[in-house]
Image (cartoon, rainbow, N blue to C red):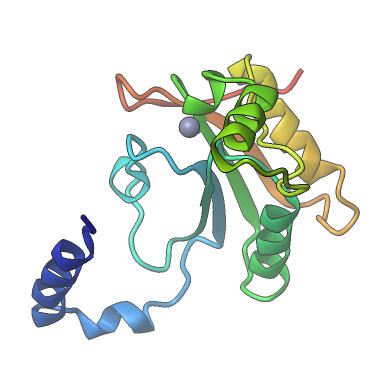
Length: 167
Ligand SMILES: [Zn+2]
């Protein structure tokens, strides 16, 4: 059963009290955030973000993929973002399997192979993982060196965000 009906009902209530100023909010913080899609990270609530505060890019694992780089480039060169935050978190689901396990599982269930995605980016060590995402951004020739770039770990049990020191 689809949850679409529930979503549409909630949206109808939202529309009734919709703040039209929301669509007009100017960009204030010039911030772009790359975060895991995990529901336990309530970005707006946990970091005091209001409409216009940040461009938010989320995917499974908070991975800096080619498409995330694409969004960061648009955020900087077209939308004015000057600071990037990478947010990964404790107990990430991407630490619970290996790429090849998931690939085998899907292959078995579908009876077919696929060349994409090339990788699922499952990982083991959280700090190493954060540093790897930072490195992917830093090493891209189109990301200016003056961009402030910080990798952080969000603790899903305490709600605390901690920057990961560079090595
Ligand atoms: Zn996660």
